[in-house]
Image (cartoon, rainbow, N blue to C red; front, side, top):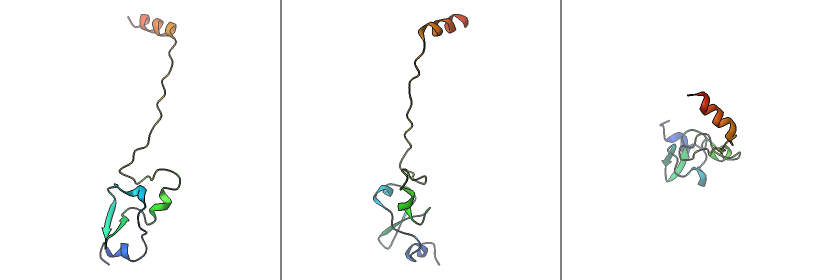
Length: 79
């Protein structure tokens, strides 16, 4: 089998809407398939697909409240 024939053999399923824009998509006979995973829909069930090149994980960064008294003591100690 050629490299693109495996996608039309039925082993690979079509991509879903969330996959649009990913660099791992290949088009074969006007159908789009994921080159990394045979069933792309199952990779999106728990949230973000770990193969997705177009989506980034959002990390929540929280500001740590610093006690002003301790901050001034630390600043004085470094002189």
